[in-house]
Image (cartoon, rainbow over all chains, first blue to last red; front, side, top):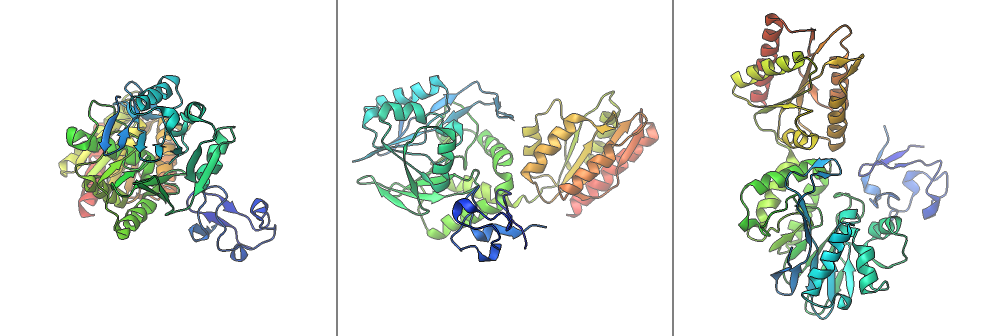
Length: 53
Length: 397
């Protein structure tokens, strides 16, 4: 599973950890996160994320 | 700063900080201002506050008191959480009533809560949301990461007055309040502000400006939270931002260096001679004389960066690394680069600078020049030739 980085603030979404505070269970692929989810650090939308190299 | 009515029912009520010279590591040679604005309508709104220093927060209250009883303020808009704009909130809220609403972005609510332990009455607004004050309407425009997650603009729609938070600001405290009162020197301060605070967000700023232009909103006046207000020609600063965002280089080279026994300095000067010989705008900056915030300002429109460092205890000289760390974070683009430096016995500095150039995605156009101890006339000739070589490349691009 790919990690995704927020190009705005540098936050990395790790699918293994998920984002439990926003109801994203550990093990959730980035692609499977609801479209209205946003970066927990800076509020950027999913469109501002890129696969971490 | 005495309050001034900048549009019907809209007052500038902020404060001047004449003597600040170090603004979180940014050299503010002209001081700065913390602008705040009061809108008097059926409802009374305060847009932003001032830095968290008693003399400023008290002055803000005193300024408001010359217009209305501050207790009559119905709501506060917080465009940006950074302490130079939100720092006055505890004082203001205590004075006007802790339960009065604070309008901010969603991230603003999150971030204000992490700055202040009070449980204020936050109203997180959505992008484009509007709020009627009576005759006037406020529209909120999210500007995330320009330059903090919480950043937003507020537009007083009917008046066409944009409260742009840190956008379009300048660290400048003068007797002037408006662009038509100030000389062209203000553009340097605006450019310096852009280079030091906003450069890395250039792609987003470009998008934002396009987005706002496409909305067809009539913006008659831009009120940033620092410096003068753009009322005569707001397009001037918007156009300047568009150009700065592109970072299109001019025919210019910047030689940035430090030196211990003047050897690296002599190399720098020989390189500069070569650049000047090619009719390239050339600027030498010794980093213990020139502040990093001025170096990055010159970096904005330069094509070539030549960086020189002595080798000290097998390392690059620390002041260069200070500058590189700062530059790296602000992500300048479109640069060609070369390194140089004198050394005693090991001489790693050039290698280390090249590594940093690579990390910053600067195009290395020469492997660099290393000179042991003191440059000979032959060494200086090589430096001159490096200047010529880089100068020619600057002209080609």
